[in-house]
Image 1 (spheres, one colour):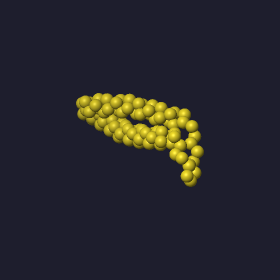
Image 2 (cartoon, rainbow, N blue to C red; image 1 turned 90 degrees about the vertical axis):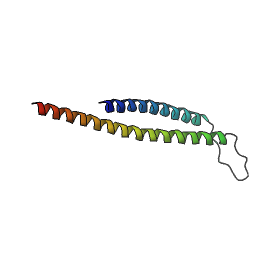
Image 3 (cartoon, one colour; image 1 turned 45 degrees about the vertical axis):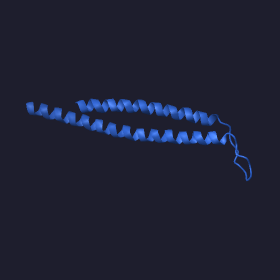
Image 4 (tube, helix red, strand yellow; image 1 turned 30 degrees about the vertical axis):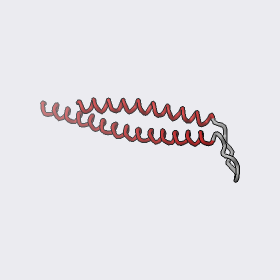
Length: 101
């Protein structure tokens, strides 16, 4: 029972972190979308002043998306362990009630 509560708490914590990370992805995505389009550089052309900022935002966005993917995988694993704990608890309850009859 304690294990199940611990898994439920872990799932709640992961849900909160996932929501925060998804919000961060949205914020960075909006920042990136608000930047002006940068023309492709031609040979000998100067580096566009916004190019560095856009490159940094793309790197941050990729890192945030990676974090979201990792958290989603962790959440799926915890949810599977929680379901297994629920099934085991239910099976043990059924076995106890069957033995008492």
